[in-house]
Length: 373
Image 1 (cartoon, rainbow, N blue to C red):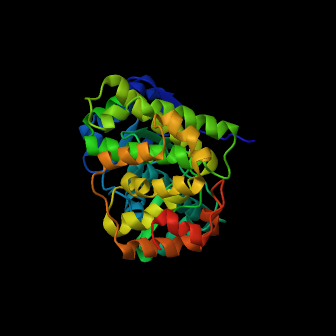
Image 2: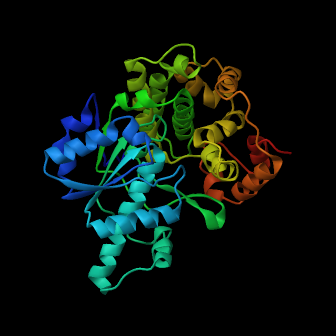
């Protein structure tokens, strides 16, 4: 068994201010990577700026990260950072800004390496080729991550999933770019809408369930998944709109997400995530909702015995109870047959995804998971 966790994690109130010196120690000028508004709205952006200024560090801000960021956006962000002369990157937000921060840090390092080694610039086409070249050096500028949603766990994973328009789907970069520092604070969830909390919390649930049922799972990853699910269960009433969230709920939600990230950092994700990418691309469906769509079929394929620990930890009596939860959180979710077939066709030939589960999956059983045939 091997456990790999290179990210230093601080999970506490006002964590950005408390660990400003460690954040500043990553470099001399930061590229702050965010979406358009959420990082500012929740206060995380100002906290990071204040922390950097208190330590005499300068920064610039790239706020053009869209949901499910594209490779083109990464190139724009890297070009901006290169012009500004940054030497570390801070991603603030959900999975999109944090994944983008990793990818931008990767591109910036490759451009710097090219100038140093070859005394030349890399074209955008060359950079894109390197981003998905499994043999490329995975080195990147130092990255710090400040999560503001409760789903991705990107603050503790090496994964960066990007939209590749040429292939009409989302694809994970093959390189593992772990943040050096993760600053986790539940207060940033206070500005999130209920729909945002639901979409990201279902993503976190999927991370933990898929990790638990992974062919790569071991005693450590399963312990992380189950403990994360227990923490996740404490705030299920909030997701069901049965009560208003408390400060403890926000702490539990973002902590459960972090546990999920730690779990998939060891095992990777499985079929629901792989199936979600085309659905998200075709329908602009939120990522967590797209993963949730395939979870019931995934659990049926796994079998009741394998799934029982997952449901017990998360506070569900059985699969029917979980499906009732999904129907309450997502009253009406439909995926056109054409999109389901495109999704099936892509995954049916993806042996890595089919073999990622701790139970056998072949193209025929995949139909049941997808919900076709």
